[in-house]
Length: 603
Image (tube, rainbow, N blue to C red; front, side, top):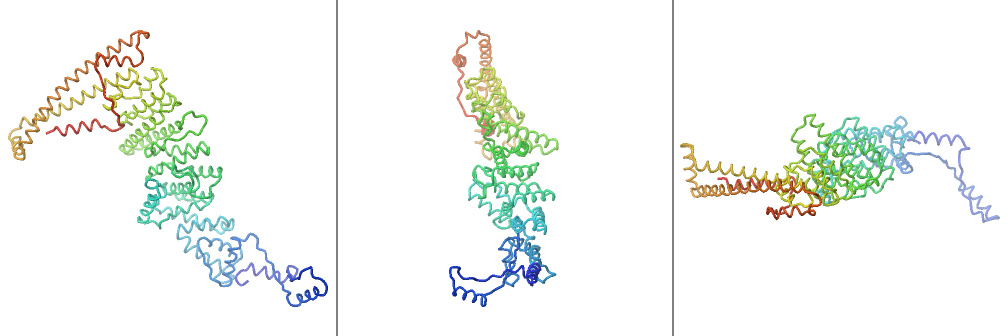
């Protein structure tokens, strides 16, 4: 009564109103009768009669535990106030009217001091206190505890460095526990607040509180990296399937399907539209995980479109495994959702155009485009084996990228070869259309060699490949001859006294080595002459082959030999035999080898 005005008033009221008292009298067993019973009842009335007050406190904040702590405080017992119970004690003090005006050093003033000097100074304590407020509504809301905690978390998050809490978003090296622990140690040495980031505590918040926190962060114009990291942490906590390495959420309390859909749409709706400056392949992989989950949960169309656009802005960081999104709709006949990846690619190209219009560094755009080109070639090779993939879909996907997205077309050629192998029933005209996506001038010599004897390619494509293969050989030989002639000219002719001085100096350093280099250059020149003659012969053979092919095309269809016969006849007639070699996409192995030969033979 000395600390609580409410208890004082309730007890005083019962003292003044006897009808509100409850008198409890101990009675003996009703089975006993006679004088023994009368004697016991008389004894009870005389000796054990007691009067007690019954006070009912409905909807007490924090329940019996917080009431017990408040009662101990009233009796001077030492009470431990923490970030987990301070909100309940503050509400209990308000409920019991334990104000400073009624009694000095009361519970309200003590809890307010703890909130101000301890809880609101630390972001993790704020999250714990905010979590405890979920069972104290609406009193905690009316006292401003909820809003103060949310504002403090948002303001302190604004001063955080996103690079310091990047490790929980990433899956770690090799997606293993050891990799995660290594990232944690790095995080701690870079100035983190301990081994556990405050972002882990966000998973303790309910979805309504988490929404309010994100809105508060947006109101303060926080950096997109911080908001995105908060959303990723929270989603990983409760949404299963966001990671292929771990299909289960990190929280044991898995929400219902409707709650998961609501959470998923909340996370996607609040993701920053612009590309994060520190986005990595792991964050892109997480976005693809969200997209797969959105398809499973049948999220809203606008939600999935926003996520696809977000992925498209950083598609160059994706991997082939990310693009292999299973087709969850019975309307799609293909194994993978090709339409979804096609939309993502379109968003990427649109974003690339916007970056070009804003004059973002051309080298960065070119690098991103080349990476996506290689990625799409690998994806085409993967889906080409699907027998249900329509040729129109394959063709449109193959020509979606601009020409400068591929340095070499070897990867695209591999995809075409796989598609023709998986669809042997396609007529010749359609095969020519599919092969039309290839630029034979961008095929390496290895790819040309493979294509020249590929039985699945149509005749027109083989002729084009042979023509450009010889053209490449001619250019290569011409370049080698020019280098050899330049080396011989430099070795055999001098330029006055200055050239003689150079020759004398080289002779002093090793005259024998210089003479050996000159002889090697002479041998190389002879080899080049021989190769030039061979190229001329190949050109004549190619011309003869063209005439023979034209003659075959003009023949009556009934006179045609069975499929593959013309190749055999040409091989028998002209002696063109090719050795099959494996092509390596986007790796100019031929040019590197040519450069190596030039360096070895150059004096």
